[in-house]
Image (cartoon, rainbow, N blue to C red; front, side, top):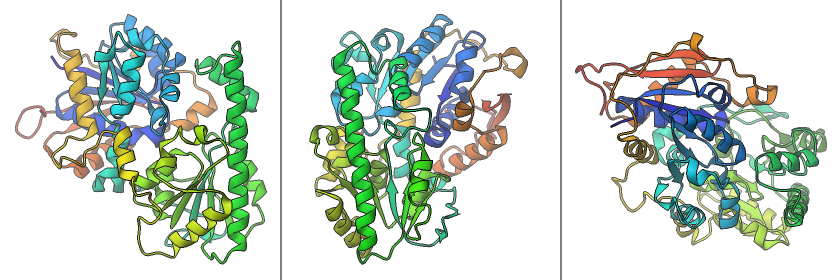
Length: 460
């Protein structure tokens, strides 16, 4: 039996929304009702929602506590770990999973065989729940029409550089522990404790955090030295620095405030900035992986702590510089070359296929989004009564109390969802007779309900 209600929880709109809409499109085509919105709203309303399937975006202690609430109210629980996309280290992947996930989750999605094997070893009593489905975020980058949607946000003009149609070297930073956007480094540690990622009572975890901060400091120094060396070189392509969203961007803005060769940007879709770059430079950032998938020249700078560098897939698919000066040489070669893939290691594709579900071997392979919906249908078979979905209205739900930071992470409305669903449907093709209606349940929470097709039936 297919689930009648599918609940898609979103924490970061720019990271997750379009991939969730791919899932929603698959679900609607198969006759399911979807509710999509801020995860914090769901946390307040699991007891008021009809029993259905709830797809969580993570597996830490915070997520696990809400899974327990949802499970008590009759929901089937599934998860996909959005924080693991770039991880190549088994211990780091397992760190993201609260032990209770083994019993709370009915389906645990993995982005490929490596992660699935890690979780199978971690959850020995629940290895059958782990499915190497892939991550729909990679569907967006592989599928030409979906990728066009992901890139639709246009870069603006910042720091005096007209970026539209111009060439630039994109430097993506990733130092959220030593340069956090909220409070300070101590608060970062406390937040890791709350999420169950670290435990201040254990010296090993304290030492691990100290190592993390020292490694980030070396990465920061490497990027600053790279920018200085690049400016002194013969390179005439300007630099755009894009701080990670969890960083304090003012640090970088202050550093390059009066610099005519360097702009610091915060706005816009990060994929659009990658697409427009002549070359991407990073230090163990997810954007390095995304740039590789998008066919961009990618350079990373190794540190004196190789076991930290090796924790990230993005470093394995990038050209690795021994230091900032060599990185400059690699970037200059990339921006002067007409070959779009210059800078990719020879074994990058093999590395990629080790960590992610590969569709390269089969041109008819199903997209990750479809595999996920089919797996949820299979898990839900026999779990819910054979009855019509309940109508959902705004008045039956509680308001979610969210912080300004949380509000900034998600900000769509019903019109946005309706338009984006239509765009995803056109991009993917298939059964375009299937229609839907979108209704507002709360701020940034929408129901998506399938309508009858022109031929009088629901999508299959």
